[in-house]
Length: 369
Ligand code: NAD
Ligand code: IPM
Ligand code: MN
Image (cartoon, rainbow, N blue to C red; front, side, top):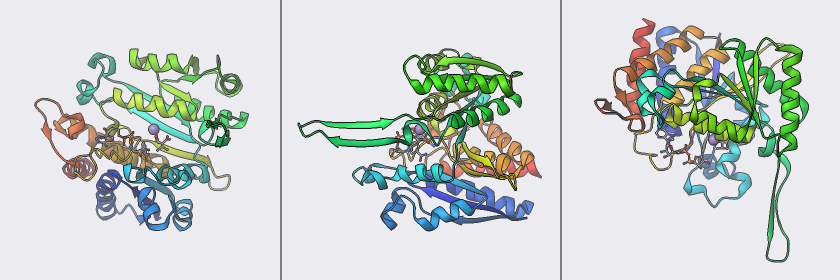
């Protein structure tokens, strides 16, 4: 059976990291007869330069038709002045919205070899394994109105609107509870019910969903600001965190640094299973951005992108053994002291993007042999 992958490398370090995943796909096709069929498109600033839009209609159609989308990163100073609607980030937001990828899974795992690369004390992060489940198609990212109005008195007014309906909170909390059952069976829901109406509803709906279907899972509620504090105070207290689009964006960058670098954190963005086929639309992307400060130098850490592909193997193709092996290959390479600059430590060997990708591929191939 062929497995279609649509690759959107994007801008900055996106293409550099994607090149390393392309090598793994080619290896899996030739050595394991994996049957991946790939196609590629443009997203972000490069799509704007080519078509005047952050993603073309043709590429949107290909993304919708593919079994899975692999996404690099978008954005950069070159496009700072382009109109808001066609800015690079709009391409990613449109993919999420139009493919209805409401569930964003952002695991933050601290590989043992990297405990000292974290900005926190090693004992606080050693063995860390948390999963942030971020709502991805609602909230203040998409709520209307979203405007800047000239008030005519030399003042302007900017409005973003936080909106959540019951069904949106129900379905994301169900994803979090289901995933918790496969882990340590604990969910912490984060919102700001003390200030925001959407926080009040979020809290109610998560509580009801828990009571109705998932009472075997341990549920805790935390105000999102306190949650951020707890994430850096004692991160290992968490198993699954479920939260809204904006809080999830910020908390996952915080969680990334616990693991040593933003260059380590993968993510999966999943839709609802199709009623007929059970298949989910899915997009896999590193949590980091296009890193304009290091783009073009061949020094970016490709692990977040490679680990995103491991999530793709697991969630889109049920290739669990291969996903486990790819993650093990990453751990082994780190254990062997091979490091990109962002996670470099004393006594380790510093390598560039391609060398890191090659080392992981070699290890993956030998684990698979
Ligand atoms: P960023 O994630 O691009 O970079 C933040 C810092 O982390 C930089 O110092 C960068 O060098 C470092 N970093 C990130 N990924 C790394 C990697 N793989 N290896 C080594 N170091 C890495 O965030 P930013 O600078 O705030 O944003 C830059 C641009 O990227 C903006 O245009 C932003 O909108 C965009 N962005 C895109 C995505 C995405 O495409 N999913 C995500 C976040 C930000
Ligand atoms: C992320 C990014 C995106 C977001 C941007 C690039 C639209 O920061 O995926 O974390 O804010 O969701
Ligand atoms: Mn972000």
